Length: 183
Ligand code: AMP
Image: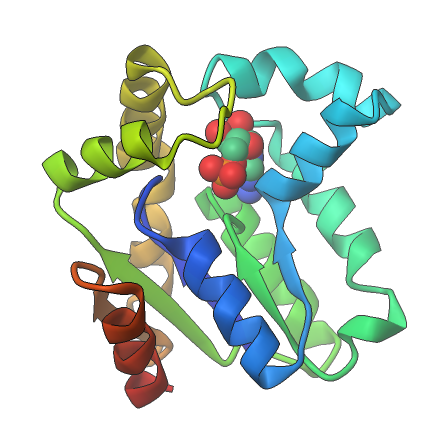
């Protein structure tokens, strides 16, 4: 099963993807985590993307697409996986959609976590993970980028029956239950 967690920054994608990955025993692939690890380890990719992440902007489609395509060649992705934070643009969506179809393992479901904007800002500011992009300005920028570049991904999938809308307000357990009911 290939699941995509979709939604604005602060919607709880990472938390829910992690829980679901453990319960289904499949890998959780977060492009944001991938970039943060690369930055921490000062790899060539990390050096290249640091300023982009700090500014709350998006890494180029070509780079993200290539990294994800490489990563999922790994055997551990053979029994399915969870994508978190990817695809984030229409270009990425059409790339991964086509690639996975070509590999005879199409996307199974797109879980759209819905959370009102005021709640998002509150959550991000209180998550206290010390992320260098979690400043008021960084958050505003990422929400802006989400509306302009990422929300259109929903349109890309709208003529399929892949999208499940999940109310993302509530306790972690409540949201987990809604996700289980939807898939
Ligand atoms: P996240 O942890 O998903 O909030 O991602 C943190 C940051 O990593 C984003 O603000 C972007 O700068 C970068 N990033 C993560 N995933 C992607 C993606 N699919 N496309 C472009 N940039 C990304």
